Length: 469
Image (cartoon, rainbow, N blue to C red; front, side):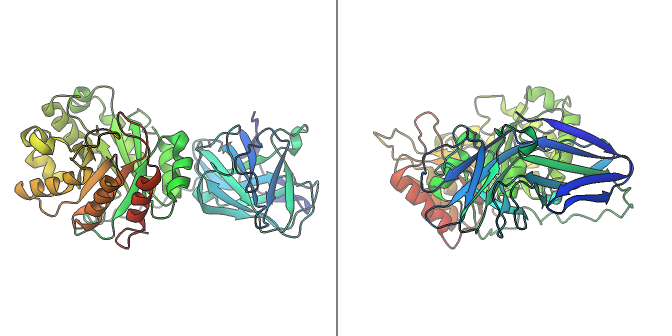
């Protein structure tokens, strides 16, 4: 269980480190908040299937074939109105001396204390900080890069070392509360910004103009299985992640996951649904949409946003068109590419039904048009309609309506055979206007997660020189 202690600092903030007690000045009205890890655990390459979540110590080790790492999860404290993060420090209490310190790296949140193992550990990409030498029994304060953290988010970190021995630290299960890992957050008053002229955005900056090279290859998987799926396919070359969210008044639905995706170096491809599409079309959610735009533009990274993917059967096409226009007008921004993800199978024999979910105004505004596409049949009796078929069908239809260079996408694709997965990948890589393609790596109806030679086929797609690294 975590606990949080907040101190209002009128003049001074006290930080305990290796050198004893250091005193640093702090602006009036700033606060310092300590919060303990909600969960933590070690993992070991020598015991890849073993969980150590109940241990009272965390162990890291840099020796080959004996590598150990530690994972901790915190909730970053919120900050008061008018304040911003000034410093964030991870405080660990080592139980052994070491001249070699540790490195702190941001990790994905798809793990639990009772289940994380070496084999299922989350992927990590962003370094947050490093320590100095360690002294047993003395708190080591590791400064983290506050610019990469957001108040209120769930933060997972991995602790690793190059030390040629086992380094141990007290865990959140330690008997003495003061020995448990803490995240110390200090705030400062937010400076009043100097008004600057608003630059004229370049409408072609995102998404890129076609032909789009290199291709964005991504994946979709449940949050609780994401780390496992990434480990199975390999993180290298996975540069986009499909995210499903519900529009909310705060605009913050799935925001921690979106931030995590960006921190992992991936482009979020986000699908938003709403309580009532007709109400959205009539303006009932205008404030929600404006808030969403502010939240997404505040991320400082490119994202894509879709209103109600695969709408066929969920609503009347006229409602979808009206709501899509409202969504575009209130959400679109230079860093947000807005477009639809439609039902790809309609392009087989029901093109008029497909077209009903579009119109000339939307096709002019949308910055991409994407579809979901699957192989028909079952794993035991695969059909002959492969997911790759949707790409040339969509490209030809876009040509016919006067948009031959509009960026295209495959929001989801999956097949029952390696051939189906491989051909979908080749269609993504070889079609000039195809921008992104995301494999559906999960269970849905007749479709199963990627395994065996189907994983190999996907790995070849993302490793292809035409794919974005």
